[in-house]
Structure formats: structure tokens, C-alpha cells
Image (cartoon, rainbow, N blue to C red):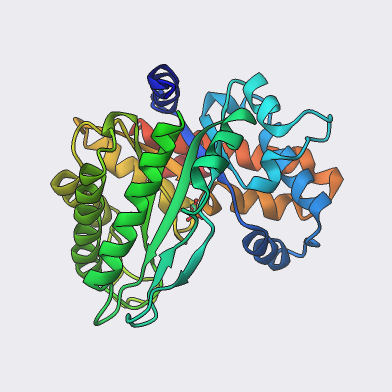
Length: 339
Ligand code: 13P
């Protein structure tokens, strides 16, 4: 079996560059269609390609972005200059990642909970993705908070598949980005989210240990510990930062080099402020940065709205958001910078 240690080391070294984060541009066709429709963009392959080209060709974006997670369609496409997207990213000094899970299916004998599928044939797909230029890969599991969820069954089932996927990635020389997302939907309090997040992360790291996943070559992409969107008692920025760090310190070994949060439905400004508040505390055992989709893209997608004349303005919006998040990853962001 090929020893890919050198590849894993190189990739994780680049993904942990201080002040850099990851752009999640790996929305499935169904998800990007929803986002496009919301701002009046037609859902065609040409538009998906043009939009993702706009993101990835933003001048000097590599100052803030170390890697971009792609959907399989984009990995196989060429950009508007007829260069394959992974090659164009490499030319810009940015790593290409790939979403490798195949989405959610119901988990039987639970209260509408889901498990993530995609393990069948994964080693073959990973070899193919690596040959096409992917150096890291993402797998997302989701957990809902309600009176009786997340259940022990959903927590255990998702932990098991996350760990098996991560082991497959490392065997293929691809850095796994393990994404357990405790969903923000609902009326739950930040305290309920803290309890659920702690149980989820504890199970994930237990499974990663059982499957002998090397944490030194693993990225954790968690949700922040935050109240539900419909909760009547929204938590302060400090409370979110404190609760999130409390849970991470209790469950995530210091061997994990980097934690890159998802934004999960927070506004762009909230996601930046929360990230900054964590880094402003200093002396964290891991690099703490971002891997946002919506919080990096929302303003940009609205500014573009499918108009070729708006590309420069859209790129400017993306650049500005990425820059603020880069500052937040160093604890140097201030709200006044939003103006
Ligand atoms: P959001 O930042 O929009 O939550 O997306 C991150 C992601 O990759 C979801 O899987």
C-alpha cells in the first residue's frame, strides 16, 4: 500500500496557515438551486459554473482562503478560461477539496433522524478524486435538537460512518474534514445545544479513535454552540464563544491541528463575530478558523444575481467577507470594520 504520509502532512500544513480559512462551495445541485432561486438566479449548469468561477478567480483571495471544497460537478468542470477548476485553484495557491458524502437518508427506528450515506465504493472514488487534484474531503452528518433528539442511536450511527469515511480518506492520502453539524433549526436554548454538541463530539472522537484515524491529519468542521433560530432567548456573542470553547476543550484532543467552523444559518456578521470572540481569548490548543458557505457567499451571490456586469462587485463582496473572517481567525476583527 502506498504511504501517503508526505501528502497528508503537506495538505494539513497548508490548511492550518494562520489567518486562512476554507470556502465551502460544495453545495449539491439541489442546495445551490435553492440559494440561486432565493436571489432570482436561473438554476443552470452554466450559471453554477460562472458563479463558482467568479468565487475562485477573485483577485488575491488566496491571502485569506487556503482551500475550497468543491461539489463533484465542479471538480470535473473547466473554468471560464477552459482550465479545470482544481488546476486553476492550484495555480492560485489554493487547495481543492471535495464533498464525498452522498447526502442524508432516514435512520430507521428514530424520530425522523438522518444518517449520511456514501461509504459504498468510497475508496475507488477517493482515488479518482485524488488523481483529479483533490487533497482533502468533506463528509457532513446532521443532528436535530428536540425533546428526544439527537438520540443515542443517531449519535452512534453517524459517528461510526464519519470515522469509517475519515479512515478511507487517510488511506487514500486525502485529509478528512469531519463535519458533525448540530442544526440551528428549532427553539432550543444554547444550554440544550451545549449538551447535544458535547455528546455528538464525544461520540465522533471515540469512533475516530476506534478506527485508528490519525488526528494529526484531520480537520474538524463543527457547528458552533448556539441557541436555535426560533429561540426566544438569543445568546450573546460571548456566551456562544464560551459555550463553544467549553465543549471543544472537553471533547477535541489537542492533536487535532485545526477546527474550521461551518456557519449553519448564522448571518455573515454573526459568524465572523463568534469566530473572532473565540480567537480573541487566545491560547487555544488548535488553530480555530472558518469553513463557511453561506456566511462567505451570501453578500456575493446577492451582488452577482446572475449578471455578468456585476462580477467585479460580487468579487469585492466576497473578498471583503473573506478578509473579515481572516481577521476573526486571528482575533483581530472589530464590528466597526463592517462599515
Ligand atoms: P454553511 O456555512 O452555509 O453552514 O455551509 C457549510 C457547509 O459546508 C455545509 O455542509
